[in-house]
Length: 339
Image (cartoon, rainbow, N blue to C red):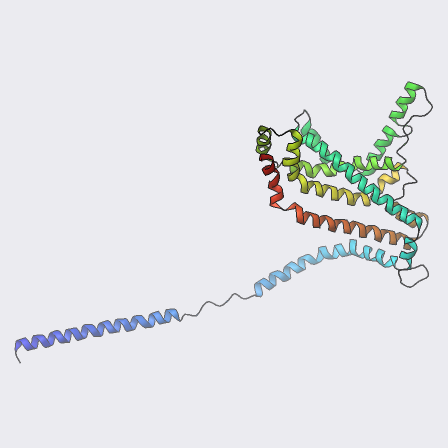
């Protein structure tokens, strides 16, 4: 064989070896890729830790639930059960029929609703006016007055009633001043023992419950909106109507609902004013249970009072869910003022 043929054969052999090495490398690479693709996904986390956390949370919730059931739910269930238990034994709706047929119950229900609604309207009007002055009219002592409102919320209702008696009672300061000046035997003021006196005391006591959420809402009003409305020529009442009130409407509704519920259940003011002719549902419960010894009738009236309070609270939640969280309502006042 010649040298030329030998060289050609060597070159062919080298090329064959190169191709074999390349194929081997590809073969080694492909299984690796396949192995990577075939690697199983990590197993899902076991649900046991989450179930354990849920069980621990349920265990922590048991003590407060037990305390709530013992302190509140059990006595409430006893009241409801007793309201269906006539004096002659058994269980029926006869006590409700008997109580609803009484003229005293209908009068107490009417007085309770009228006083609660009147106190709510009065507290809303007075609270709104005072809150606007405190929040937007600078005067010395405004911050101190705002802090006093927080303290006023801690006062018991009978303390306000006693203060009104000292001022406007038959032997109060106003009547005493009148008799000293005119020499009359009696003063002209004798209304605290009437429904109007009870209404005045409730409005005085419940107004801070409206002012507190209103002042918090007014503190969030953007002063730039007020300045823009004023620069556009809006009068103060229009600024209040178009800028301030839309922002404060949820707080106003919350305060009014709170006063309405508190007014339905108010007992101390009616008792301390000495208004014997003003009988409300709480006063009727007191009269039936302690004075007449009619515990079943007292439980019936108490259940009616509870149902009214829960119904008003449900209505309040419904109104707040539809109006309180609406962004359009929160921003509509500024848009109208700018227009």
